[in-house]
Image (cartoon, rainbow, N blue to C red; front, side, top):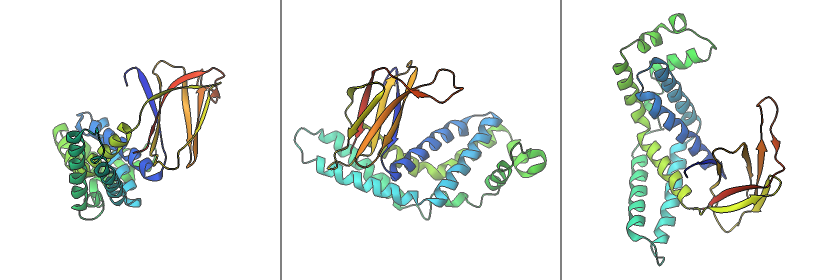
Length: 256
């Protein structure tokens, strides 16, 4: 949505986890291809963040469940009149392929990287604020001082462990985002509240405001209702306060 900033609030734990990982994957894709040492250092740290996340959460199982849930919905849509059959069949094909790809992964996501000595060396070093690779981890210093092409190739190889889960999460989230309809609303005195229809499976709430706005939304959502407070922060030296103005905004409740 051009010239608008979009704020999102996931409704459940699964979508919340997927959104966090999706952001990490986007950051990794950016920093892993860069030739700068500091960008590559960020890429290594992001890989360790992903491994930490996947080590404590069975994200593969959760994403498979989400894809299977979406597959069931898409299949039911094919029998409805007026549906774009070609587009829907293509989406169904992509969901099935990514589900198969995840089923074919042996073990947990990133399991092959858990014992990587370079990544573990970087992880141990990062625990110490201001740590210096020159004496805290000579091994990591040796790796980071390799020619940039060597570092990038290595980072892309490590990143390949996340290709299938990254594609699956991105498709699932995009399908959810595309499922909602944008509607214009007014938050009187900077506040808006509405109920959620319990007969629908809400996944995500999206709020869009102009990119130049001097306010931002704070979204709170539960099983039955959600609320939005529009806050203003003048100098970032004090806590933001709810604006007293009536705020026009665009709301999209995604319930695919």
